[in-house]
Length: 262
Image: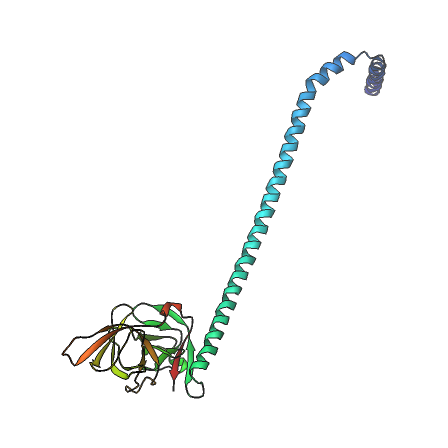
């Protein structure tokens, strides 16, 4: 009972104090202390406001940066895919044009042409077709009506081609012009040149003449272009003369070659 009376007294005292403070505030008794308090707390409030504002902006910047990075990554992936698809379309178009051009030069009803892509080149040219595609040793490899070389190695999925410019390559050939039809032996040289040897001295051979396959080996069709004469070497009182020959195109420029199958 006494404890309850004590609590009531405390409650009444608090009410009286509150009323007194309210009356004093109405009379502007606390105007000066409030002004002092505002002077002290305003910079603190401003600092807290600026800090919170800066923190919010930093969070927004981090979120926007992450979003931008994700969007940039997605755009890069899309661009990479588009470039890859574009490259594939260009390659397919180039191969289609090469196939059409090949059929115009060598009749597909006469020749069984197997298209193949070059996949490597050191001394020998590697292609992406092999025995699984019907390829065999010594088969001729052409581009349009130009002889590139012959197959010297075959695996199930790849083959190696010895080019006509290889030092081990020897092909019977002839030069056709308006004055004569000179015959000789085309021998590969180191680099990208060949030498037309064993040409009779009285035969006419001139610069820019085209050199063709004779076809006496039995593995190369007759009349395939081997190259173009760039220089003629003649010596008096000798039975034979020679001519320097270069291919009419670069192997590195080809996206597709064709093997003459059986």
